[in-house]
Amino acid sequence: MGIIKDRFKEKADALATEIKSILQEHGNKVIGEVQLSQIYQGMRGMTGLVTETSLLDAQDGIRFRGYSIPELKEKLPTAEGGSEPLPEGLFYLMLVGELPSNNDVHHLTAVWQRRSHVPNHVFASIEALPIVTHPMTQFVVAVMALQTESHFAKSYAAGMNKKDYWNPVFDDSMDLIARLPRIAAYIYRRKYKNGDHIQPNGLLDWAGNFAHMLGYTDENFQDLMRLYMTIHADHEGGNVSAHTTHLVGSALSDPYLSYAAGMNGLAGPLHGLANQEVIKWIFQMREDLGTECPSIEQITSYVQQTLSEGKVVPGYGHAVLRKTDPRFTAQMEFGKKCMPDDPLVKTVWNVYEAVPPVLKSIGKIKNPWPNVDAHSGALLVHYGMVEYEFYTVLFAVSRALGVLASLCWDRALGYPLERPKSVTTEQVRKWIKGEDEIWGE
Ligand code: NMX
Ligand code: MLT
Image (cartoon, rainbow, N blue to C red; front, side, top):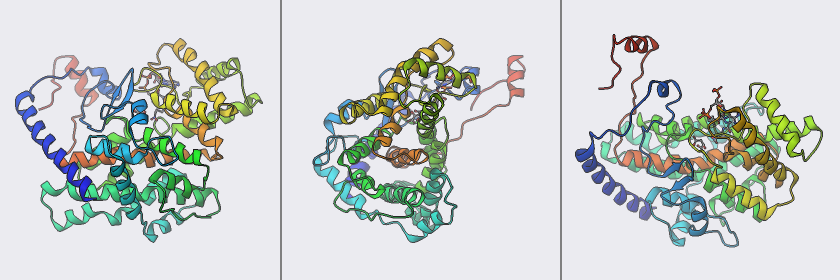
């Protein structure tokens, strides 16, 4: 681990020095203005955070340290016999800021294998929950139970110089990422496979081993997990899960507490839970229409019905993106390569034809195009993973890579407590009348 930690620290020290001089010279520059509507409407379009790991462009989609998803597929190391990027490589790229060598990736696989032990009390905490408990709730409870292992919490309690915060945060992040596949697989096997658990395979990479512990032996499923874990890992800093992890971490809550908080946000239907909602919605549509492969016309009127009932069309729309999500496209390409005739996957492609014109016709929806969640479930169903309530847990395991790499940067760069100013509508009323001011310090 020493090598990657040392490289990270070297990069972080250099950036900290650069940020200091940027702020000394340009700290007073104005980067934008805030309109009243923005503070009532979810701060859409307001720049208020710095996140190093990735950047989202409304038209082109996500770039991880400058690399698009097609570029990552070309440049990141793959597993032997596989063709999708190894998420270890993406993590290295987000953490260190450079493309990894094959050795770097193998090193990370070995480190995560070594650190993957999950203490028994975590499994006991999961077992204490009724089996009907949603998998995301079981997952967050397990992460909270694992917090007993936090190096940061122990070091802070013992007394630690603030310059050293990054070090135990780094160790906690590595431990947590290493342990999450085991926890997630345990929940899956507990809830859906009669508690018939599968021991880890120490010869496999992080995502391949995760697929194995879930109980899927098809090599294409392992490759799907590598792709899935790579493309869901990060979406710059403002999304609910990344922002929450960063915010809670800014109070010096340790990585277990911070990540668990972020994942409670991912569990919301407008965020990560949308992946289960998409498949639930398509299953319901197929049942209601009495056909496995509804036509584009049938889907169009079903979408109109969904909207008329005051519900969202899951998997469509985005707070920042204004084009088809490249993560959707990457999954569509996987589908075309591995399962071009699958009826559910074809339905997802028909939904892609049907939904945007309907959403465009309403006028108010800023992005009528599909996001990552519109496609993921159908690929999983193809391999037999039909238990859609589990899908957000897969998203959560992947998202750990991005939000924890960012948390390491937050502490290494010495970022302070996050605490924006709020106002009351009473103050807004007075401000409109010119009787009061709205300003920060
Ligand atoms: N279906 C129906 N209505 C929608 C949709 C949609 N897919 N997308 C946006 N709208 C509505 C939205 O609810 C709002 O209505 P109102 O003014 O009545 O409150 C209006 O259109 C304007 O919203 P936008 O400014 O276009 O979108 P916003 O930035 O507020 O929200 C989402 C973004 C992602 C929350 C929204 O598009 C949505 O609810 N999509 C469906 C859920 C989903 O797929 N979420 C997953 C996002 C990706 N992820 O993994 O996190
Ligand atoms: C994400 O991956 O976090 C989602 O697309 C939501 C977002 O970016 O706001």
